[in-house]
Image 1 (cartoon, rainbow, N blue to C red):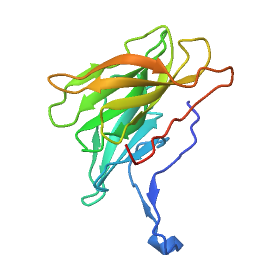
Image 2: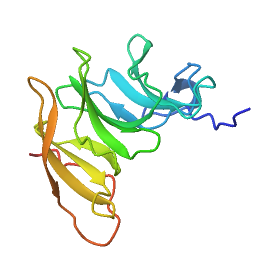
Image 3: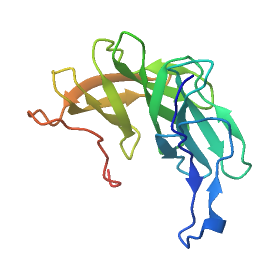
Image 4: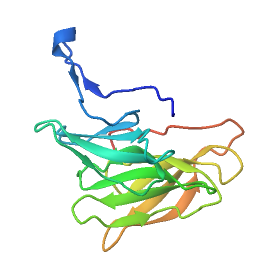
Length: 184
């Protein structure tokens, strides 16, 4: 038997009140790392503890208007930290494969095309976040032996690629969870 904490995604209006909480009623457990779509209609989240696939963490999207939940990834890996592009078409996330590090992937939500932007299986590349113009992604990497914040250029058409990785922190402290200013 697998033990699991039951984290649930819920919406709480600013006015508060227990009667106003909208909990995602779904059999998925361990609902964690969250991201809102730019239009506020969708909430992407990671979920694990599917008892048939121990160790798998998949990404899902909750349509707030209809209540529908769709599965975005289904590869059995550990997928987390979703981040929508500002135009809402692309979803960046980290994916950990057994015996390897983590890479940053981008999924085209319109076509289903998937691309590995970092393709660096020896190291951890994680926590992607889009620049305001969707031309770059900041992320955390330990490719220099320490968690640092990197920025890479992202080319989305005709297929997604990442290039020109630059370490922007480069000091002995561990750096993590980058966030962009909303002004480019």
